[in-house]
Image (cartoon, one colour):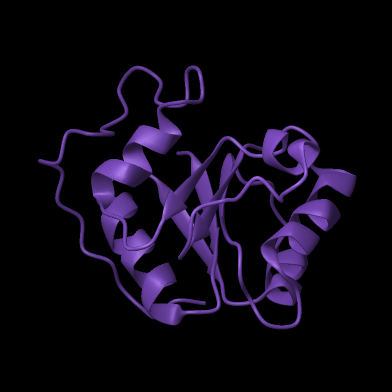
Length: 140
């Protein structure tokens, strides 16, 4: 099962991503700060990271720089309330697969994941939408 890390200071966003992607056969791990994400990344390596751009204490770009020190090849997509502008340095944009503007929906998330070759291997449910799975417990 592929593991997705979603990092966003808004618990509603992490909960939404979890609810949208877990029925697709993906394990979704949540973090509500850069510090929490870095702590989680000591114990597992995700297959994909959705990362909020604007967070207090540590921005998405700052967190991405820390992530890249150890995880150079894990694909990352930024979640943002506003489009990326030309003022962002080109090398920063090249560090990410995509950016998704909030509000987003399940299709936006799935289409971003499909940009990764072989992300959804034979037998995965992604995009099927018919898979039903209850999510239990609270977000971390």
